Image (cartoon, rainbow, N blue to C red; front, side, top):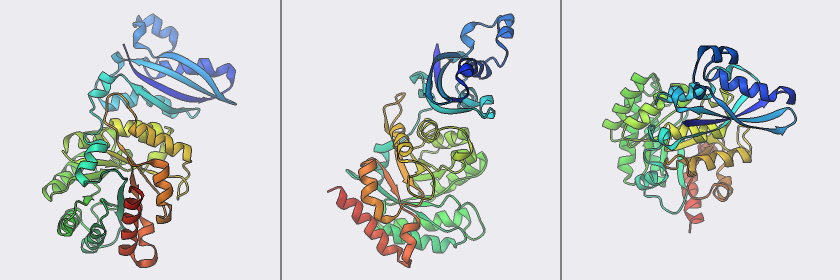
Amino acid sequence: MDALRATYELRCDASAAETRAREIALEQTAELPREAVARAGLPRDVVGRVESLREAGPGRFLAEIVYPAEVLDGTLSQILNVLFGNTSLQHDVALVDLDLDPAAAAGFGGPRLGVEGLRELTGARGRPLTATALKPVGLSAERLAELCRLFADAGVDIVKDDHGLGDQPAAPFADRVRACQEAVRQAGGRTLYVPHVGGAPSEMARRIAVARDCGVRAVMAAPMLCGLPAFHEAASGSGLAVIAHPALAGAARIAPEALLGRLFRLAGADAAVFPHAGGRFGFTLDTCARIAARLRDRWCGLRPAMPMPAGGMALERVPELISFFGADTILLIGGSLYAGGDPASRAKRFVECVRNAAT
């Protein structure tokens, strides 16, 4: 039974495209020359199969390859291995899309809360959620908590750690989480404080336990830093909402919509941060639209997740962002709220702009 479908972009001459696609199907399963597969007596349904091949432009071809359930083992690491394990080392190939049999996807669960769950946590209905980041690294836990209170008082829905915040001496993790969670509690609203829970799996588990004990209801991790299987374990076992950060996501030849929109969602991200076009990074509007679509579409029976565009978004772009992404979005405005030295008034302006746009 076919369980996994992958689409690869090949960069090669037309004369080599079909051969190249067949080589990938073998490399990702039997990892033997075709004649050796025949001599080994392997059943044909253990080897990947090229389903389609079409030209996508000069020297570019899209190959769709299906893989049988027999090569999977119910783990996310094996899905990654079959999708792009050895082939990721071959520089003429990129993974651009994937699909899973719903039964195979159900074993991973996807977002535990997703769009509706995040709305329930924050009480935000009929509009995008607002979010900002505590920064920079080097501030004390007390100073970060002051900023957290300031943003919570302004009515920001989500105040997350900058992903550069870990367990540094300036603001040790436990001290920071305790202080920031107390700050949002004192503000009296429904703001979520979202700490960054990086580290090895055992350290992630420790930090999640600390956060949960402090009353935190959501955490953030970077799947490409901690590893997608570790992220999945944290997302499925923490009982908290989990936001995925894209740090290191540009190091793999995997299309952003496949990595951030599909794999992060499969691994349990309730929301995924990504850099929107026109900020500090090079994503195009088309790429951002595809990421958002793959986070929210009907796919494998998984809950939809929230897109979280970020990456140097100016406060003045909020109306444009709402028009582009719609209501089921978390707008992450970070550095722009700090600009001019008055984050309190700019945070209030941010919140008012989003709420006014929804009326």
